[in-house]
Structure formats: C-alpha cells, structure tokens
Length: 217
Image (cartoon, one colour):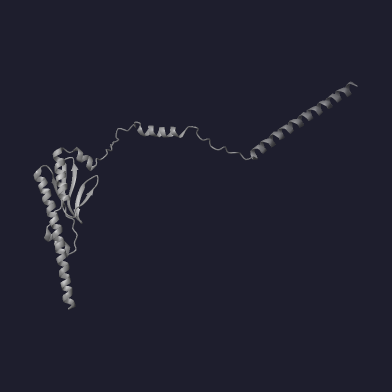
C-alpha cells in the first residue's frame, strides 16, 4: 500500500511538472508572436511641432544680430561705407562767394537759346544738341567746370569724313572772377561752334542740291 502511494505521488508530480512546462512554453511563444506583430505594424510619423514663440521674437533676434558688435581677427581690414552727398547738399555747404560763382555760371549757360539742362546727384550739365556747353561739379577742392573747345576746322574735317572723335574736356577750377569769366568764354565758344557747324552743314546741303540740279539738266 505504501509503495502504491509513492508511485501515485510520483505520477502526480510528473503531471504537474509537465503542465508547468507546457504553460511556460505557451507564454514564451505568445510573447514572440506579440513582438513580431508589433514589429510588422507601420510606425506612425508624428508631424514636427511648430515653435510656439511669436514671429516678433525672430525679427528681434535678427535685428539684434545685425546691430550687435562683431569680432574680427587681427588681419581683417574693415572698410566703412559712407553715404555720398548729393550735388544740392554739396552746394549748400559752399560759402556764399562760391555759391555766387556757381549760380553765375549756370545763369550764363541757361541764357543760351536751346540750352538743355541735365542734372543728377553728381553733376549739372548744359548742352545744345549733342554739344556740351559746360558741366559743373562740386568736389572737395571746390567747384570744377568742364568745357569742350573744338576747333572749327577740325570739326568740319570730322563732319566731311564722318569721323567721330571724343575730345577730352578742358577742366577749370573756379577760384575767382577770372576763372568764372574763363568758363563763360568757353560756353560762348561752344555756342558759336554749334552755330558754325549748322551753317557748314547747311552749305553742304545747298552744294549737294546744286550738284544734283547740274546732273539732271
């Protein structure tokens, strides 16, 4: 009887051990299948989160960075940019006498028939057609005028041979009344040159007409 009881207990122990092993194996298999299932599912990509800071902060940072001081190396050359003054601003900085000289030259140029004004921030110029009478500039040294004095014979030669040569202007620094009168004379010479050139071209046209009539008769 005692032996039968021991055998029964041994069989019961074996059954319990087998049941426990089965349960453990099922748990291991279930964990693997769950992991595989999770790995096979697509991963949802979260959209990037926008900054909650207002745009004004970014602008303020950019302004601060542009206005702040920068560090440079020892071998760096810093070139500072300065705004150029306009012709009107330079004129206002002239003394009263220099302003008088400037206005006197301008009035003389404007008094010429057909004179055309060209003005920008760098210079003021007066022309008749393509002929420059005078160009006025204001530099550190004061008022500087450019006049182009062309010899009439040389100009007629260029017209006859259809040659265009740009002649360098005569530069005159305005320092007193004599220099002002010199510029005025240069303007008068340029005006006479325009009139002589027109007369010369008129004579050429008349000569061509006469030649054309002779050939037709």
